[in-house]
Amino acid sequence: MIAQATLGAKAPARIKTLLIKELVESWQGVQTFVVVCPIGLDAIVSNQLRAALTAKNIKMIVVKNSVARLALTQLDLALAAELLDAPSAICYGGESVVDIARELVDWSRKANAFRVRGAFVEGQLFSAQQVQKLAAMPNRSELLAQIAALIGSPAGRIVSTLTSLGGRIVGSVKTLAEKLAHQNQTTAPDEKTETKETPEPKDTPPKDSQ
Image (cartoon, rainbow, N blue to C red):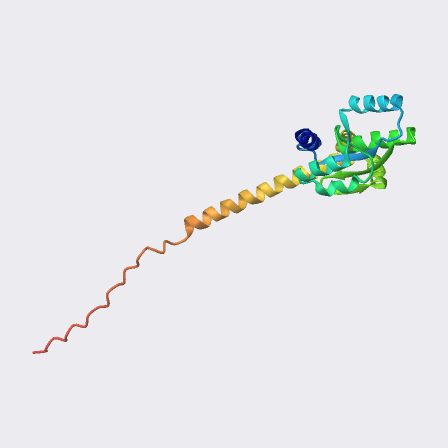
């Protein structure tokens, strides 16, 4: 009976250790994620949410806070544990954090029971309000498209031309400076060359007159 009781006490500890190990392995390399509260969603809405997230390569893991805190600590992300003060699910992946925030904020408007609690982005904590602002920003694809449009515009072409011209001017000045330095080296006197002194004429004694 004592042996059975001891085994029963150790079993939850082993399970907790395995859960922590699984989370650590799943979150390796993850530096950005959004925390949501999924409690209150019915089965149909929950399945629809997961399908929508999967379609955008976004993963959502419902976690036990005590286990998640220990896993985050092992990953040197202990600061993110401050977001885990209620039933939580951690969402990560996607093309960028903007895509994650946009999708989750959109679902929080569709389902009243679904709430965005905050985010952890490259070492910084974001509140729920900041996540909403993040969702309104352009994502990576949209930002690249805006840059491409700017380059193709007249203003963008002027900037590109000036940049190219400036590079050619700098190159020409550098070449001229190198030529001048080379000329100075070839025309400079050799310090090691010794100059021979002309000997002074010796005084000759005058001839005796007879």
